[in-house]
Length: 210
Image 1: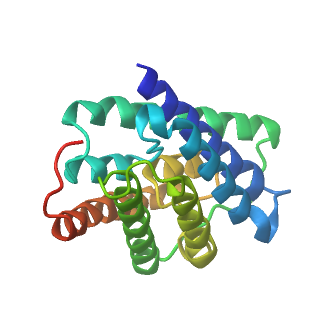
Image 2: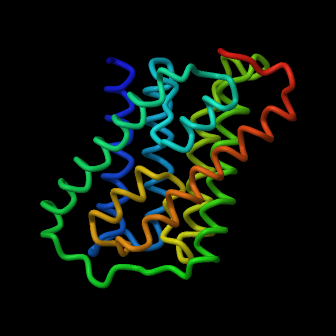
């Protein structure tokens, strides 16, 4: 229960900052900095309790990578989705519910961007936060946060920059992305997480449940 609560809180603040910095009047080109910063802080805060996934694709990757049990999947993903929905509702209240025209990204470019950068994020999480070699390091939160920041700058204009099914749900509820595009995020994000787990297994052959 406490792990699920941490996952809900971390996802809530991530999606809240995304909404408040992207929905007009937002932070413009500084939005990815704020998003990376809050994710870094939340990862450091929640890492010792839940592992600080805040992302269903990361949870899938960590499970497939042999670093958490299957029993964590449903509670974590449910908590992440709940945190995202609550954040989207709060953003709608604080911003007055006005967003503008929802983005409808081109399918193939959006899919590829979401796939590639979700892979990068999940791979970084697995390497810096789950291996014996990286145990006890002080940089894991920063590595994860700057990965999302870089991804948002690089791919945000192409796909909307979710790299996270829970974030995709939140930005869709906020009206930033058209509901008809939600499948792109879900398929690309989960595929990116699964691919990251595969590469992690190949580069860490002794990976086991941790």
